[in-house]
Length: 464
Length: 105
Image 1 (cartoon, rainbow over the protein chains, first blue to last red):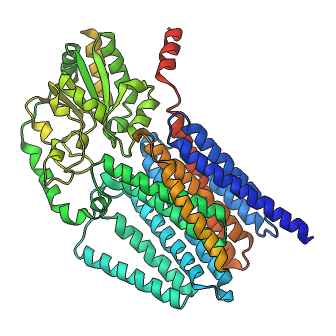
Image 2 (cartoon, chains in turn orange, blue):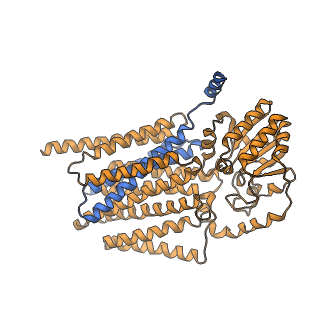
Image 3 (cartoon, one colour):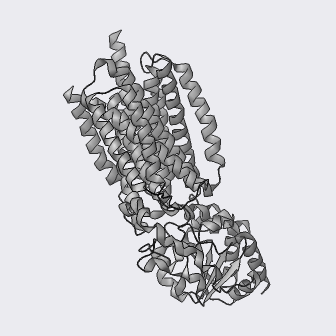
């Protein structure tokens, strides 16, 4: 009898080992454009094996609520992720990350309830504590990130008087609580830690500006990985340790890469709101300054006489669902023998690579999408730079010191012969900073919905 | 006892190196799918949730375990579906597309 049980346990562990290997292969695949999709499938398969094997765990109880919870989760999760618009992708990743962190926190605390009577050694208490703390921070932080990206609250940094003092107190309180729990562990104190961690997560994310939120999501993703690894230590499960640590380590590296793409450092992103909140105040003053605006038809005709056109898309393009019509415009230009390319800023859209996804959805060919470093040297040869729904990513203020976006690499739209902005209004971009390029003498603005404007431009272009 | 924790620590530390090595060279366009994919992978906490719920006794433990399984399921299912949807849009190569369009004309 015991013999069969041991054998079953070994098979279970082998299944977990297999799953852990698939996760490593999946990450490897995901970093290569050709194998990315199969990488995802490999991980999916490994996950299915791991979940299936767990059902054969000896003496598994509560299978009914388990299966019901899974079915409910799948019924909510699958349609949500299938049908949410691609523009809302960053929010979606945030929320799915948050629930993972929440699950890790619950796993840690529930496991501790079970083992507390055995008087677990301090390192086990530490593992539990880290699982609860990090998992909950990730949960509440992701929730705030979701609310920000969904624009349920402002995307601007949220600051209030005494914020630094309150945050410092929170930090000190959390550390004190951790020390107390290590000395006198109890479930009640763990719940208090969970509550404090919840507030800490919110306090970290609230002062971060909307444009930086994607980097933050990547960081929170990494944190959830660490929380999962901590639960793995508590449960004594190598697969959880491997999967959690993989995500934790690679997530941190990915976060650094994203920061680099924005020309920022991580501490700068996390803490800059406290110092720079004032400089955004200049945004309101530009309203009365003269700008040049023209009709879409005029611009259509103007494009017809260009030799080379750069299209610089931003999040506004996606919001207006104008990916398809911009491709029609590009096709029309090419039919007239005009060179067209898309200059893609690494953080165009709301996440690194987000714009590529959105344009791929509209069947824009790959070879027309140039990354910023490729595109920038070509911009001075362009007759027209057509900026559609972008703002911060072409803002020359980034080249000067003292702006909140100083140092962020930008697309040199201002080097093109003429600059055309398609905008809904004079409202500043996501970062909330005025764009001097709008007032430049070679800039023309076309106000209105990007999709309508582009449709009119295509009409005028086809006729000329 | 001390030995088990050392074993776990060994796995933990070696995996840190693997995690960094494995994504060392990832092009910017794959940053978002990679984030989403690794998001799905930490959904493996579903196994932890199942183990905890599977040995839970008492109303509170069962309630917490069930909640954990539910949250983890959302993470797994949502994470993989979103990633697949993103990557699905990258699938066509430009060369093939031009050819198919020409054929269509």
